[in-house]
Length: 415
Image 1 (spheres, rainbow, N blue to C red):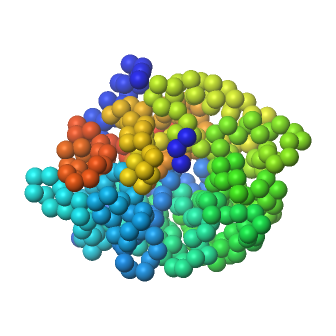
Image 2 (cartoon, helix red, strand yellow):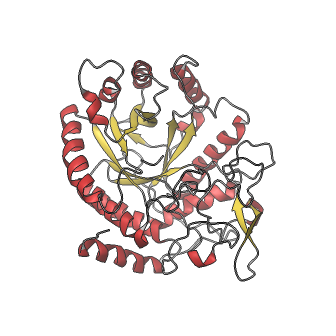
Image 3 (cartoon, rainbow, N blue to C red):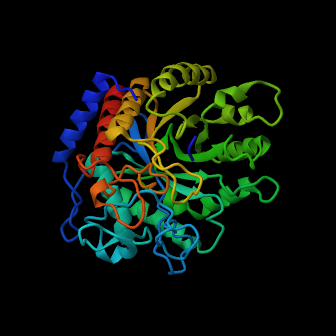
């Protein structure tokens, strides 16, 4: 999924937000009445910030497929773990947790992981979004998982998200990831349409986002997952639009280079059909070259191409990245977070460009360390396996607070 200077203004903004988040309310104890939050306007994406939600973590050994906590063993163990960060599970329902072999310092016991199959986990995650002003989530739905057993696990997590979004006044959207799809081996269009028909009770939820009077759907991967051809992409998007969907395409970050006419195999014809485009920029820049990327690619090249096509836009932001435990060739802390300054800079840049909405990559992606939910600090990390932690001087919910602050500023820009 991957592809040090900070201005004094942005540094001040980041520090201000981090100080303010110390006042944020923490997770709600599970034995009291849920907090009430204002319900967002679910009729439009404009002026909002949504987080990508993987929701793919499972307790191993329960017949529920890939746990995503590990890569090659049934259970995560030292030397066999698929994440670079460890979630801070303070406030999680105890019945949703399981012990690991990773030893915490100072006799604190074993690190615990959670299962998204447990409704209390998804409920807590959406409560975190609501408490910090994040508008909701784009729930990931990998192409090859809905057709595999145990399909029920993925549908169960999606319905947990639906219930939590309804409960906490958030919005949600289904986002299909094309990884696993291949033109010629399956009818991608028919598979997606059939899956959506099965999920009609989910997409008819009052919490399901609409835009321009239509239910919203995102398809991620055109120009990235090249096993799906451009011709197939045209068929997919055309069918979805004919079925009444507002279609967002998550595309490769240099997408406008493929708009050249009469170039066989290029995805330009697919992009032109989209209602909204969302260039995937995770790994495209670091702290040292973000300003150039923002000022050139996003503010000029992307903006000009989108205006010419009369297509709406969404901008992706991400806090940093590391992918060394799941990927032997990966680089530990490849994209440092710079104590939140990297994320704050992108959020400020995105708000300034006033896209329809900001996509936060990701809420819970600890595999590649792009998560914004609370994770363990450096001083609390296990002693028998290398993991990446957030800086000790940061509140646990610092990244959630920064995202929520950006959401409020973008909403004001659209008001």
